[in-house]
Image (cartoon, rainbow, N blue to C red; front, side, top):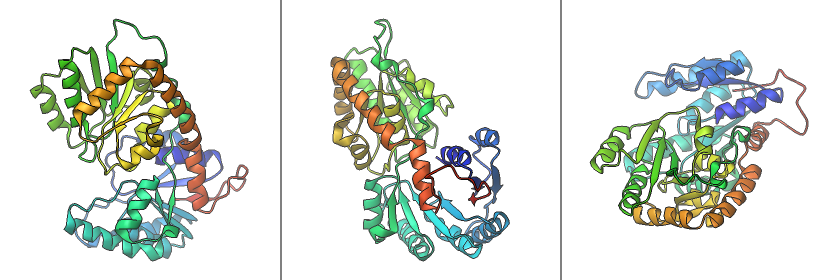
Length: 364
């Protein structure tokens, strides 16, 4: 998301400065190197309360050094101390990204999180939610008013995605290829997709499931695939830099996730790539997929329902093509990187009615 924002802002004459809390992971470092963006690594490694004050102090010095006019905080919660440093450093417009639906299941940790959000309220102009679903949860769980929030959908670099093979005649000898792109973390749900793959295998379907991503759940998923004897059908591809190419060869995109899902950028990518979609019927997916008009929705954590929906796409490819085409048209309008960059820029106080001529403006 930060990379897409920087690409567009640079083309409009805004000079972004990327402020990084820790030096790792550095997966996108080559991409930012290619843009020649200024990057500042704060190196926040201390623990306990002292780290918050170190964070505020280092953001203050960075804001003063670059004379930043606006600041977008991707961390939520920590944004309170980022905002303290930015305000003291003279930054006029401060917003924070909210990317997930609030999770209050761990009561003590969530109570601390609520305190951080309340601390940041007087210093933050808007909490920018990635969906209306997340906005509703933010207001419900943190007690913020609607005017303290805004909704800006995550954006996709549409020029990188070409229409998928799903709309072309399939080779009969080719396995039906199902893909999922997401972090291998607990707020996603690759396990249900793997269970659905077992059901489909037992039904005699010739399928191949490609799961892109990495994270803390990788070892557990590897063990599950081996235990279910699915290594011939389910492949963990790890972190990949060729997601558009992978999307282009899919017959179906399966997005199995949990109610904690805030948006699902890979869901928007699949829409842009015009791949038929089956997704969990949770708030964010329902919103992005137009209540099921742009992709099939199934109950979350229901492997049998997911397998049935995949079979339904295979059985009626014409209906799947119609939904996929409508999904692409919608995504081009609502989920483009350019639209996201303009809306975030407006919240930071920049006008994009025409290309900016004052190239010296800066944002952090």
